[in-house]
Length: 348
Image (cartoon, rainbow, N blue to C red; front, side, top):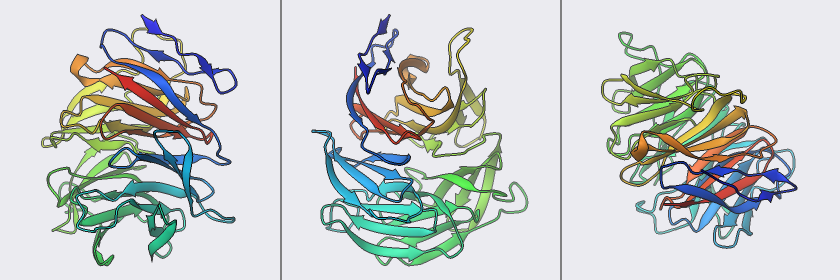
C-alpha cells in the first residue's frame, strides 16, 4: 500500500511509500531558495535549526518549526564550496550554544556562531581541499580529512592541532591512497575514527597511534556515506555504484553482515549510486536513510523490519548529496545538486 504524497514544487511528485513497517513519511518543507548545490544538511542537536552548506560557500540556517531561513552565514562572491558542516555537541564544555563548524574546498576550517553570524575562529590547512569533518561525542575534539588523505585531529578548546594521522601499520593496512569523503568518530571510543574514500577502502584509525590500524576493502565512498550505529557495533557504508551500494558490517570483525537491496524484486527503474548514508540517531539506530545519483532519490529503511524500505523521496532534478535524521528521529532532510532542501516528517 503506497501513501501518495501530493505533487510539490512545480509538479515534481515527492512520493512516500509505506509498506508493512508501520512507519511512513510525509512532506514537511520544500526549501528551494538556493542558487547553488546544497552539499550538506544537518539538524542542530536540539532540532531547532537545519543548516545547508552550499556550492557558493554560503550556509543557510532554517528554523525547523516554520521552514523560514533564520540566518545566512559566509555569504558573498568568489567563495569555493562549503563541503561539510557539523554542529558542536551540546555536551561540549563551552557555554556558547548554536556553534557549528564548517570545512571548505579551499582547506578552511571555520567555527561559526549562527545567531550573531560571526566567524569565531579560522584554521587554514595549506594546499588541502577538505571534504569531511566530525566532532567526538563529548565535543572536546574534532577531526578533518580530504584531498591529502590524512586525518587531522584538533582540540576544540584551544583550536590547536593535536596530531596528524597518516598511513598505516604496514601489516594490515597502508592507510588511504586517494581522497577521503567521509569521517566518523566512534560514538563510544573517542580514540577511534573511521574514514572512507575513493580508494575503495574504509580505514580504522587509532588517534593514540597516529595511523590506520585496520581496514575494509570494497566500499567506494564518494560522499558522506560512512556511519556507525549508536551502540558502536555496526558500520554502515554507501557506495557510488549500481549494485551492493548499501552495506552493513560488523565493526569489530570487519565482516560483511548484509547487503541491503535498493529495490525489491525485479526492477526496471534506474539504479541509484549512493553519495550519502546514515543511521538514525537514537540509541537503537533503528532507521537508515541513503541517497544518491542515477535515480536522484533517497530511501528510508526500517532496521526493526529486516531493513525494509518504508519511504522514497523523489522529485530531485539532480543527485542527492546529503541526508540527515533529526536528533529525535521524527524528521529527515535531504539535499543535493538542485539546491533544494527537502524536509520530511517520519510517522511511526
